[in-house]
Image 1 (cartoon, rainbow, N blue to C red):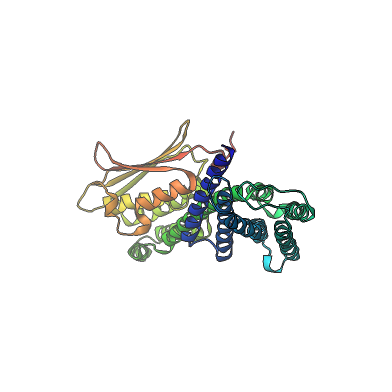
Image 2: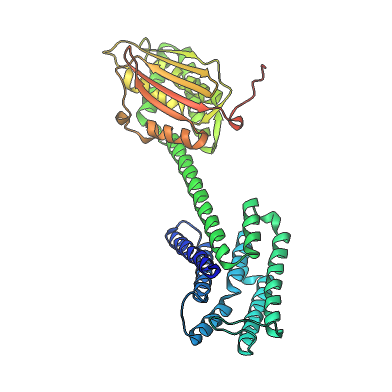
Length: 406
Protein backbone atom coordinates (compact mmCIF):
# COMPACT_ATOMS: atom_id res chain seq x y z
CA UNK A 1 0.00 0.00 0.00
CA UNK A 2 2.79 2.41 0.91
CA UNK A 3 4.58 1.60 -2.34
CA UNK A 4 1.46 2.39 -4.34
CA UNK A 5 0.94 5.71 -2.59
CA UNK A 6 4.60 6.53 -3.16
CA UNK A 7 4.22 5.71 -6.84
CA UNK A 8 1.13 7.90 -7.10
CA UNK A 9 2.98 10.79 -5.45
CA UNK A 10 5.88 10.50 -7.88
CA UNK A 11 3.46 10.12 -10.81
CA UNK A 12 1.71 13.35 -9.79
CA UNK A 13 5.10 15.06 -9.55
CA UNK A 14 5.92 13.82 -13.06
CA UNK A 15 2.70 15.26 -14.49
CA UNK A 16 3.33 18.51 -12.64
CA UNK A 17 6.88 18.63 -13.99
CA UNK A 18 5.81 17.93 -17.58
CA UNK A 19 3.33 20.77 -17.31
CA UNK A 20 6.15 22.98 -16.01
CA UNK A 21 8.35 22.00 -18.96
CA UNK A 22 5.62 22.95 -21.42
CA UNK A 23 5.08 26.24 -19.58
CA UNK A 24 8.81 26.99 -19.57
CA UNK A 25 9.14 26.14 -23.25
CA UNK A 26 6.36 28.49 -24.34
CA UNK A 27 7.53 31.28 -21.99
CA UNK A 28 9.57 33.11 -24.61
CA UNK A 29 9.78 36.30 -22.56
CA UNK A 30 11.94 34.64 -19.88
CA UNK A 31 15.67 35.35 -20.12
CA UNK A 32 17.63 32.67 -21.97
CA UNK A 33 19.85 31.32 -19.19
CA UNK A 34 17.19 31.09 -16.45
CA UNK A 35 14.88 29.46 -18.97
CA UNK A 36 17.46 26.82 -19.90
CA UNK A 37 18.23 26.17 -16.25
CA UNK A 38 14.56 25.72 -15.44
CA UNK A 39 14.20 23.26 -18.30
CA UNK A 40 17.27 21.33 -17.12
CA UNK A 41 16.08 21.28 -13.49
CA UNK A 42 12.59 20.11 -14.37
CA UNK A 43 13.87 17.52 -16.86
CA UNK A 44 16.28 15.88 -14.42
CA UNK A 45 13.75 16.04 -11.59
CA UNK A 46 11.08 14.43 -13.78
CA UNK A 47 13.54 11.74 -14.87
CA UNK A 48 14.48 11.03 -11.26
CA UNK A 49 10.83 10.83 -10.24
CA UNK A 50 10.08 8.49 -13.16
CA UNK A 51 12.92 6.21 -12.12
CA UNK A 52 11.58 6.18 -8.57
CA UNK A 53 8.20 5.06 -9.90
CA UNK A 54 9.73 2.28 -11.96
CA UNK A 55 11.91 1.17 -9.06
CA UNK A 56 8.96 0.38 -6.79
CA UNK A 57 7.87 -3.27 -6.48
CA UNK A 58 4.46 -2.36 -7.87
CA UNK A 59 5.63 -2.98 -11.42
CA UNK A 60 6.86 -6.55 -12.31
CA UNK A 61 10.16 -5.82 -14.05
CA UNK A 62 13.11 -8.18 -14.46
CA UNK A 63 16.12 -7.81 -12.09
CA UNK A 64 18.53 -6.67 -14.86
CA UNK A 65 16.14 -3.83 -15.67
CA UNK A 66 15.97 -2.90 -11.98
CA UNK A 67 19.73 -2.77 -11.84
CA UNK A 68 19.78 -0.49 -14.88
CA UNK A 69 17.18 1.76 -13.24
CA UNK A 70 19.24 2.03 -10.06
CA UNK A 71 22.36 2.78 -12.10
CA UNK A 72 20.70 5.62 -14.05
CA UNK A 73 19.10 6.90 -10.85
CA UNK A 74 22.51 7.00 -9.22
CA UNK A 75 23.92 8.99 -12.13
CA UNK A 76 21.07 11.52 -11.94
CA UNK A 77 20.95 11.76 -8.13
CA UNK A 78 23.09 14.91 -7.63
CA UNK A 79 21.97 16.74 -10.79
CA UNK A 80 18.75 18.38 -9.50
CA UNK A 81 20.53 19.92 -6.51
CA UNK A 82 23.46 21.11 -8.64
CA UNK A 83 21.20 22.64 -11.26
CA UNK A 84 19.07 24.35 -8.62
CA UNK A 85 22.27 25.77 -7.13
CA UNK A 86 23.26 27.08 -10.57
CA UNK A 87 19.85 28.75 -10.81
CA UNK A 88 20.42 30.13 -7.32
CA UNK A 89 23.72 31.72 -8.38
CA UNK A 90 22.05 33.18 -11.46
CA UNK A 91 19.37 34.80 -9.28
CA UNK A 92 22.18 36.24 -7.13
CA UNK A 93 23.68 37.87 -10.23
CA UNK A 94 26.69 35.51 -10.37
CA UNK A 95 27.97 33.48 -13.31
CA UNK A 96 27.59 29.87 -12.21
CA UNK A 97 30.00 28.75 -14.93
CA UNK A 98 32.83 30.62 -13.20
CA UNK A 99 31.86 29.96 -9.60
CA UNK A 100 34.40 28.09 -7.46
CA UNK A 101 31.63 26.80 -5.23
CA UNK A 102 29.90 25.39 -8.29
CA UNK A 103 33.06 23.52 -9.24
CA UNK A 104 33.38 22.08 -5.74
CA UNK A 105 29.77 20.91 -5.90
CA UNK A 106 30.33 19.25 -9.28
CA UNK A 107 33.34 17.44 -7.79
CA UNK A 108 31.28 16.32 -4.79
CA UNK A 109 28.48 15.22 -7.13
CA UNK A 110 30.89 13.17 -9.23
CA UNK A 111 32.30 11.55 -6.08
CA UNK A 112 28.76 10.81 -4.90
CA UNK A 113 27.92 9.13 -8.20
CA UNK A 114 31.12 7.07 -8.07
CA UNK A 115 30.39 5.97 -4.51
CA UNK A 116 26.82 5.03 -5.43
CA UNK A 117 27.99 2.92 -8.38
CA UNK A 118 30.63 1.26 -6.21
CA UNK A 119 27.97 0.50 -3.57
CA UNK A 120 25.84 -1.23 -6.16
CA UNK A 121 28.60 -3.30 -7.72
CA UNK A 122 30.10 -4.19 -4.32
CA UNK A 123 26.84 -5.78 -3.26
CA UNK A 124 25.96 -3.19 -0.63
CA UNK A 125 22.81 -2.39 -2.63
CA UNK A 126 20.74 -5.29 -3.95
CA UNK A 127 19.12 -3.83 -7.06
CA UNK A 128 16.16 -6.17 -7.25
CA UNK A 129 12.39 -5.77 -6.77
CA UNK A 130 12.60 -6.91 -3.15
CA UNK A 131 16.24 -6.02 -2.66
CA UNK A 132 17.74 -4.54 0.48
CA UNK A 133 20.70 -2.34 1.29
CA UNK A 134 23.35 -2.85 3.94
CA UNK A 135 25.39 0.01 5.29
CA UNK A 136 28.86 -0.50 3.90
CA UNK A 137 31.64 1.98 3.22
CA UNK A 138 30.50 3.03 -0.24
CA UNK A 139 26.85 3.48 0.66
CA UNK A 140 27.73 5.51 3.76
CA UNK A 141 30.14 7.62 1.69
CA UNK A 142 27.46 8.26 -0.92
CA UNK A 143 24.96 9.37 1.71
CA UNK A 144 27.61 11.50 3.42
CA UNK A 145 28.51 13.27 0.16
CA UNK A 146 24.82 13.94 -0.48
CA UNK A 147 24.62 15.54 2.95
CA UNK A 148 27.76 17.61 2.28
CA UNK A 149 26.26 18.92 -0.98
CA UNK A 150 23.13 20.05 0.88
CA UNK A 151 25.22 21.72 3.61
CA UNK A 152 27.40 23.57 1.07
CA UNK A 153 24.33 24.78 -0.81
CA UNK A 154 22.66 25.91 2.39
CA UNK A 155 25.81 27.71 3.56
CA UNK A 156 26.04 29.53 0.22
CA UNK A 157 22.39 30.52 0.61
CA UNK A 158 23.04 32.00 4.06
CA UNK A 159 26.04 33.93 2.76
CA UNK A 160 24.15 35.38 -0.23
CA UNK A 161 20.75 35.81 1.41
CA UNK A 162 20.81 39.61 1.02
CA UNK A 163 20.92 39.23 -2.75
CA UNK A 164 17.59 37.38 -2.81
CA UNK A 165 14.00 38.23 -2.10
CA UNK A 166 12.14 36.56 0.77
CA UNK A 167 10.32 34.27 -1.66
CA UNK A 168 13.60 33.23 -3.29
CA UNK A 169 15.18 32.47 0.08
CA UNK A 170 12.34 30.17 1.12
CA UNK A 171 12.19 28.49 -2.29
CA UNK A 172 15.92 27.75 -2.54
CA UNK A 173 16.16 26.69 1.10
CA UNK A 174 13.41 24.14 0.55
CA UNK A 175 14.94 22.98 -2.74
CA UNK A 176 18.34 22.33 -1.17
CA UNK A 177 16.80 20.19 1.58
CA UNK A 178 14.08 18.22 -0.23
CA UNK A 179 13.65 15.38 -2.72
CA UNK A 180 13.52 15.75 -6.53
CA UNK A 181 9.72 15.49 -6.57
CA UNK A 182 9.43 18.47 -4.22
CA UNK A 183 11.96 20.38 -6.32
CA UNK A 184 9.64 19.97 -9.30
CA UNK A 185 6.76 21.63 -7.50
CA UNK A 186 8.85 24.41 -5.95
CA UNK A 187 10.70 25.33 -9.15
CA UNK A 188 7.51 25.30 -11.17
CA UNK A 189 5.61 27.43 -8.67
CA UNK A 190 8.47 29.90 -8.60
CA UNK A 191 8.57 29.92 -12.39
CA UNK A 192 4.84 30.59 -12.62
CA UNK A 193 5.15 33.39 -10.07
CA UNK A 194 8.01 34.85 -12.11
CA UNK A 195 5.96 34.72 -15.30
CA UNK A 196 3.06 36.48 -13.58
CA UNK A 197 5.46 39.11 -12.23
CA UNK A 198 7.05 39.55 -15.66
CA UNK A 199 3.62 39.90 -17.26
CA UNK A 200 2.66 42.55 -14.72
CA UNK A 201 5.91 44.44 -15.32
CA UNK A 202 5.39 44.32 -19.08
CA UNK A 203 1.83 45.53 -18.67
CA UNK A 204 2.98 48.44 -16.53
CA UNK A 205 5.71 49.22 -19.07
CA UNK A 206 3.09 49.18 -21.84
CA UNK A 207 0.95 51.60 -19.84
CA UNK A 208 3.95 53.86 -19.28
CA UNK A 209 4.79 53.82 -22.99
CA UNK A 210 1.20 54.62 -23.90
CA UNK A 211 1.30 57.55 -21.52
CA UNK A 212 4.43 58.82 -23.23
CA UNK A 213 2.78 58.36 -26.62
CA UNK A 214 -0.19 60.30 -25.30
CA UNK A 215 2.16 63.19 -24.56
CA UNK A 216 4.11 63.04 -27.79
CA UNK A 217 1.09 62.65 -30.08
CA UNK A 218 -0.79 65.83 -29.21
CA UNK A 219 -3.16 66.81 -31.98
CA UNK A 220 -1.30 69.06 -34.44
CA UNK A 221 -4.42 71.02 -35.30
CA UNK A 222 -4.94 71.95 -31.62
CA UNK A 223 -1.44 73.46 -31.46
CA UNK A 224 -1.96 75.16 -34.81
CA UNK A 225 -5.33 76.64 -33.82
CA UNK A 226 -3.95 77.85 -30.50
CA UNK A 227 -1.03 79.60 -32.19
CA UNK A 228 -3.40 81.20 -34.71
CA UNK A 229 -5.65 82.42 -31.89
CA UNK A 230 -2.63 83.96 -30.16
CA UNK A 231 -1.63 85.56 -33.47
CA UNK A 232 -4.96 87.37 -33.84
CA UNK A 233 -5.09 88.27 -30.14
CA UNK A 234 -1.72 90.00 -30.37
CA UNK A 235 -3.29 92.73 -32.51
CA UNK A 236 -6.71 92.82 -30.84
CA UNK A 237 -5.92 92.21 -27.17
CA UNK A 238 -2.17 91.97 -26.41
CA UNK A 239 -2.69 91.51 -22.69
CA UNK A 240 -5.00 88.56 -23.22
CA UNK A 241 -2.60 87.14 -25.80
CA UNK A 242 0.11 87.15 -23.15
CA UNK A 243 -2.16 85.26 -20.78
CA UNK A 244 -3.01 82.66 -23.43
CA UNK A 245 0.69 82.20 -24.18
CA UNK A 246 1.32 81.65 -20.47
CA UNK A 247 -1.54 79.13 -20.19
CA UNK A 248 -0.42 77.35 -23.35
CA UNK A 249 3.13 77.18 -22.04
CA UNK A 250 1.90 75.63 -18.79
CA UNK A 251 -0.15 73.14 -20.77
CA UNK A 252 2.84 72.09 -22.88
CA UNK A 253 5.10 71.89 -19.84
CA UNK A 254 2.65 69.59 -18.06
CA UNK A 255 2.46 67.32 -21.09
CA UNK A 256 6.22 67.04 -21.48
CA UNK A 257 6.71 66.56 -17.74
CA UNK A 258 4.40 63.55 -17.87
CA UNK A 259 6.94 61.73 -20.04
CA UNK A 260 9.22 61.25 -17.04
CA UNK A 261 6.41 60.26 -14.66
CA UNK A 262 6.14 56.48 -14.36
CA UNK A 263 3.64 56.29 -11.51
CA UNK A 264 0.61 58.24 -10.39
CA UNK A 265 0.61 61.98 -9.75
CA UNK A 266 -1.31 64.19 -7.29
CA UNK A 267 -4.77 65.00 -8.59
CA UNK A 268 -4.05 68.68 -7.95
CA UNK A 269 -1.35 68.56 -10.66
CA UNK A 270 -3.71 66.92 -13.15
CA UNK A 271 -6.37 69.48 -12.23
CA UNK A 272 -3.94 72.37 -12.80
CA UNK A 273 -2.98 70.87 -16.15
CA UNK A 274 -6.66 70.67 -17.10
CA UNK A 275 -7.24 74.29 -16.06
CA UNK A 276 -4.35 75.43 -18.25
CA UNK A 277 -5.79 73.54 -21.19
CA UNK A 278 -9.28 74.96 -20.63
CA UNK A 279 -7.91 78.50 -20.39
CA UNK A 280 -6.48 78.11 -23.88
CA UNK A 281 -9.68 76.62 -25.26
CA UNK A 282 -11.86 79.32 -23.70
CA UNK A 283 -9.69 81.92 -25.37
CA UNK A 284 -10.32 80.18 -28.69
CA UNK A 285 -14.05 79.61 -28.20
CA UNK A 286 -15.12 82.87 -26.63
CA UNK A 287 -18.78 82.77 -25.62
CA UNK A 288 -19.10 79.11 -26.67
CA UNK A 289 -17.39 77.31 -23.77
CA UNK A 290 -18.16 77.61 -20.07
CA UNK A 291 -16.52 75.51 -17.35
CA UNK A 292 -17.40 75.00 -13.71
CA UNK A 293 -15.22 73.28 -11.10
CA UNK A 294 -16.51 71.70 -7.90
CA UNK A 295 -13.43 69.94 -6.59
CA UNK A 296 -13.19 70.14 -2.80
CA UNK A 297 -11.39 66.78 -2.65
CA UNK A 298 -8.00 66.81 -4.34
CA UNK A 299 -5.77 64.90 -1.92
CA UNK A 300 -5.39 61.67 -3.87
CA UNK A 301 -3.37 60.38 -6.82
CA UNK A 302 -4.27 59.36 -10.37
CA UNK A 303 -2.34 58.49 -13.55
CA UNK A 304 -1.07 61.44 -15.55
CA UNK A 305 -3.23 62.56 -18.47
CA UNK A 306 -6.44 61.14 -17.05
CA UNK A 307 -8.76 64.11 -16.51
CA UNK A 308 -7.48 66.45 -19.23
CA UNK A 309 -8.11 64.06 -22.19
CA UNK A 310 -11.67 63.44 -20.98
CA UNK A 311 -12.36 67.17 -20.82
CA UNK A 312 -10.74 67.61 -24.22
CA UNK A 313 -13.02 64.94 -25.69
CA UNK A 314 -16.04 66.77 -24.31
CA UNK A 315 -14.93 69.98 -25.98
CA UNK A 316 -13.98 68.26 -29.21
CA UNK A 317 -17.43 66.70 -29.58
CA UNK A 318 -19.44 69.46 -27.95
CA UNK A 319 -18.26 72.85 -29.20
CA UNK A 320 -20.04 73.77 -32.42
CA UNK A 321 -20.96 77.27 -33.69
CA UNK A 322 -24.31 75.87 -34.84
CA UNK A 323 -25.15 74.53 -31.36
CA UNK A 324 -25.79 76.06 -27.98
CA UNK A 325 -22.75 76.99 -25.86
CA UNK A 326 -21.12 74.01 -24.20
CA UNK A 327 -21.13 73.76 -20.41
CA UNK A 328 -18.60 71.44 -18.78
CA UNK A 329 -18.62 70.53 -15.08
CA UNK A 330 -15.74 68.86 -13.26
CA UNK A 331 -16.50 67.60 -9.74
CA UNK A 332 -14.91 65.38 -7.10
CA UNK A 333 -16.58 63.58 -4.22
CA UNK A 334 -14.87 61.73 -1.36
CA UNK A 335 -16.74 58.56 -0.36
CA UNK A 336 -16.11 55.79 2.13
CA UNK A 337 -14.67 53.56 -0.60
CA UNK A 338 -12.66 56.17 -2.49
CA UNK A 339 -12.92 59.32 -4.59
CA UNK A 340 -15.39 59.79 -7.41
CA UNK A 341 -14.56 62.20 -10.25
CA UNK A 342 -17.29 63.23 -12.68
CA UNK A 343 -17.01 65.16 -15.93
CA UNK A 344 -20.35 66.23 -17.42
CA UNK A 345 -21.06 68.20 -20.55
CA UNK A 346 -24.16 69.50 -22.32
CA UNK A 347 -23.00 68.52 -25.78
CA UNK A 348 -24.76 66.29 -28.31
CA UNK A 349 -23.35 63.12 -26.75
CA UNK A 350 -20.17 61.14 -27.12
CA UNK A 351 -19.26 57.52 -27.77
CA UNK A 352 -15.80 56.02 -27.19
CA UNK A 353 -15.72 54.82 -30.79
CA UNK A 354 -15.76 58.42 -31.95
CA UNK A 355 -12.22 59.03 -30.70
CA UNK A 356 -9.82 59.24 -33.63
CA UNK A 357 -6.60 59.41 -31.60
CA UNK A 358 -5.33 56.55 -29.41
CA UNK A 359 -4.25 58.84 -26.58
CA UNK A 360 -7.76 60.25 -26.23
CA UNK A 361 -9.49 56.87 -26.22
CA UNK A 362 -11.37 56.16 -23.02
CA UNK A 363 -10.26 52.54 -23.21
CA UNK A 364 -6.67 53.71 -22.77
CA UNK A 365 -7.57 55.83 -19.75
CA UNK A 366 -9.62 52.98 -18.29
CA UNK A 367 -6.71 50.56 -18.64
CA UNK A 368 -4.22 52.93 -17.03
CA UNK A 369 -6.62 53.62 -14.16
CA UNK A 370 -7.12 49.92 -13.51
CA UNK A 371 -3.44 49.00 -13.78
CA UNK A 372 -1.89 51.88 -11.86
CA UNK A 373 -4.39 52.50 -9.06
CA UNK A 374 -7.19 49.94 -9.35
CA UNK A 375 -9.64 52.57 -10.57
CA UNK A 376 -12.61 52.37 -12.93
CA UNK A 377 -14.15 54.53 -15.65
CA UNK A 378 -17.78 54.58 -16.74
CA UNK A 379 -19.42 56.43 -19.61
CA UNK A 380 -23.13 57.20 -19.74
CA UNK A 381 -25.52 59.75 -21.28
CA UNK A 382 -26.94 62.56 -19.16
CA UNK A 383 -30.69 62.70 -18.66
CA UNK A 384 -30.77 66.33 -19.80
CA UNK A 385 -28.55 65.60 -22.81
CA UNK A 386 -24.82 65.35 -23.16
CA UNK A 387 -22.36 62.93 -21.63
CA UNK A 388 -21.27 61.96 -18.14
CA UNK A 389 -17.91 60.30 -17.46
CA UNK A 390 -17.36 58.91 -13.97
CA UNK A 391 -13.95 57.92 -12.66
CA UNK A 392 -13.53 56.10 -9.36
CA UNK A 393 -10.22 55.84 -7.49
CA UNK A 394 -10.43 53.36 -4.59
CA UNK A 395 -9.15 54.41 -1.21
CA UNK A 396 -5.66 53.05 -0.73
CA UNK A 397 -3.34 54.17 1.97
CA UNK A 398 -0.37 54.39 -0.38
CA UNK A 399 -2.38 56.32 -2.93
CA UNK A 400 -3.76 58.96 -0.59
CA UNK A 401 -2.11 62.24 0.34
CA UNK A 402 -2.28 63.87 3.72
CA UNK A 403 -4.30 67.06 3.92
CA UNK A 404 -2.04 69.82 5.29
CA UNK A 405 -5.10 71.68 6.54
CA UNK A 406 -6.09 68.94 8.96
